[in-house]
Length: 271
Image (cartoon, rainbow, N blue to C red; front, side, top):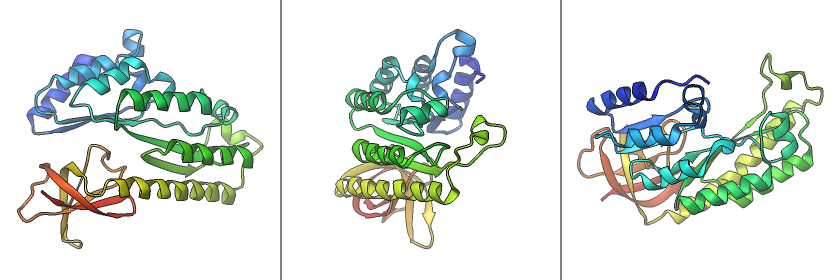
């Protein structure tokens, strides 16, 4: 967790904007820790405010904000600044207090639920992304069932779930109560099946809506353009495929009317 000085980041961001970049992604191992080692406190709200003052950026996105460091100040900045997309990537890993403690993480289901409620109140129409791990050493069937219920209750807009994989040199690698690989993988599949149901429901609700899309290219096989909305991080989330009667440049922002869905993706036409 080593921060760069704010003036260096702003200088690089300004250079990117001057060279045609319109979407900026602010990312670190734990972005909410930014500045603690240099300035003695988290300076992420101040950094984001400074980046928003740079001409040229249309969207600024923040990834990897850990729940225990998400402050009211940060949420207020995201809600206030037009350039900050209403998207928050918050890796929680699990909701069970005992499992989280073994992961050297904080919180439990109640604190996470309260935080998510606050985020959605402060940032209307926010897209929440998270990542989960199933089969961490010691995870019981009851703890996994609680995780399933949590996913159903919260209805994250974006979610990825991975079966636990031992990493060499970590304390968890030496835990004796390892969960069998097949159980880990099956639990991960169950979570993703639940998320697919949620995603289908959210995509259905998006039908007939109009969204702003940044074009990322042309799919020769589907014979249509594709891109992303504010609700989709590059290389992580789904795509929006759209038809257009006129040529669309890569990097161009267009309005698309959504008229169909396909798994995690949306399909529409340029307006």
